[in-house]
Every structure is written in structure tokens, then in C-alpha cells.
Image (tube, rainbow, N blue to C red):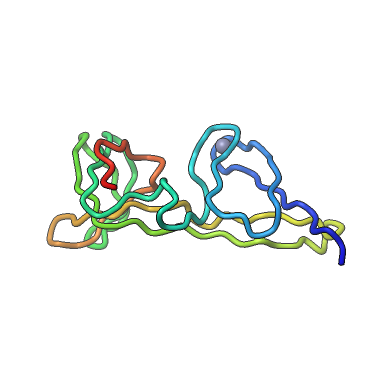
Length: 133
Ligand SMILES: [Zn+2]
């Protein structure tokens, strides 16, 4: 069996390129320190129920009631849960079989918004005010 080749990761934020081995989760970009792709529970990054975040003014977020929104002012929210984010390991057969990681979503923080509909924002876009253990 041959040693697995490394997979190329390109950060969507800063375009920094780094390499990981097969099936590595919990990636933090080495260029900009952003949280990218799938993160497992209880690895210190995702926020637990009852944690507090600040959603800064001008942050883009999604409301199940109103669709894509931009925060008009900075507000503190109580975290209900996080979504883990998603990614996949691929081989580009058109590019000499080079392997790369495709990041679909970063972890998302969810809170209960107006009308009790979910609101969610990229975990990189919010400020952690209180991290519940
Ligand atoms: Zn980056």
C-alpha cells in the first residue's frame, strides 16, 4: 500500500494554501486563523448551548423567517447550538490526480431569532463572549 498523498487546502478567506493528510477535520487556516470546514463536537471550537456571542454590526446572517440579513447593530445572542460545517476530500482527475479538500461550509452558530425562527451566522463572524463548558 502506498502512503496517502497530502490534500491541498485553499482558504476561502485569505487564499492561503496548506496541506493535510487524509480525513483530517477541525482545520484552522494557517494563514488567517479562521475556522474552516467540518469541526467535531467537543474539540474546543464549537459553542455549546447557553454560550453567549456578540453578533457585530454589519455581520451577514441567515434567518429562517427573513432570509439573508445584515445585522443593523451589534447584539448579544444566546447560542442554541452549532452546526458542524462540511467538507470533502476529492481527487481532480483532470489535474494529474491531484488531491484537494473542498470546503462547503464552516461551522455555523445558531440562535433563536424573532418569531422563534432559527438565525445562523458563520462562527468566524461572531465574537465569543462566554464559552459554556
Ligand atoms: Zn485563511
